[in-house]
Image (cartoon, rainbow, N blue to C red; front, side):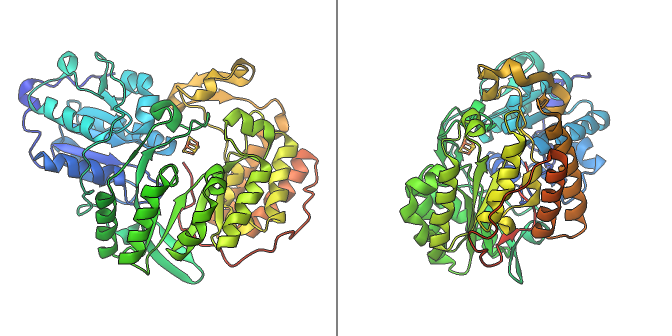
Length: 477
Ligand code: SF4
């Protein structure tokens, strides 16, 4: 692989407009905070990066040629798969550019990226490390001399930075307008949705979660003024709904509630959604009526499974009964839950799969579940806490570095076949405009056929509610 050998002469001039190119490939249909936040921090230090979000715009060769530092944001698996291809193109167009991957999946896949695609990787709280990298390249450091805290290179190992950063208000002025991104769909109304984060990292250490190996149970709050300022600028740009993308909005409930209250006080017509785990819904149940009054349109909750065995492996700290109770808490508050699942794991039995389908019907939440959730298969990235499981050898296959995951095969061949068929079915029906219920019915029939089991749902145990608000981009990492 060619390396980016930057001579001191080439490395100077990092402050020229376009000398730093920040690229995002996919952020669940949101205007990328992972561009807006480092852009603000770099500008504050007199750098003038150009930002490109390839999910809504073209990456021109001229922009690549003009760049000395190309930094690619990879907060999730899909972004990394796309970003790896972009890095290949950058290398072909501009062999001298320093390529850096930053974000959660950069540090997890650092070995492979540094060997095949990148000159540096940055994980954890990345803004200051990225700034340090820009400063170092600006004064001519490169190759072996490049030694910046939080920046891992082939010559220097460096742990991700885990510390509260001096945040700046994200700079969104050169990003595509909110109308190009995900919208909130509520009944007949469709409004532009914005995105921000009140906290980063997570207090919990679920074993399948990519945050766990990077943050190890730590989280950081973003100052209230910075979050509210970011919301304000997005509302001024036309946004009428905010997604709080915190891994868990109730890791710091006092902080999050204060922000929700201030949001509602200033913009009473702007709604929001947030992700809150089942355990927190139960522990902090007294807050949900207030959240509804403040404009909470829905709560995403990582249910992942209803099986005791699977939940134990994932260390989710909730049970099937807890999920039913959390649904009841939210229902009583008038907030719909949009659950997410890891539908296929090595421990998910055929009976577990049909149980989720039955549960969805019984709880009246078929409309709440994006059909892609019935097709999600466990990803095991390098560094995953699942690798420390005592029985890992029994189910774990080899690491497929270029796919950024370990391989695994289900002990019941019917489950792997079902996964392939459900994934194809969901893709075809969703792109054909079918609704959740139509897709659910087909998945149910397919599962019964492939698994030879009946979905024994006591249909409509809980009546379905009103149409469920959702974002126009299904949740898929
Ligand atoms: S799955 Fe959710 S609660 Fe668990 S570690 Fe990840 S972000 Fe935190």
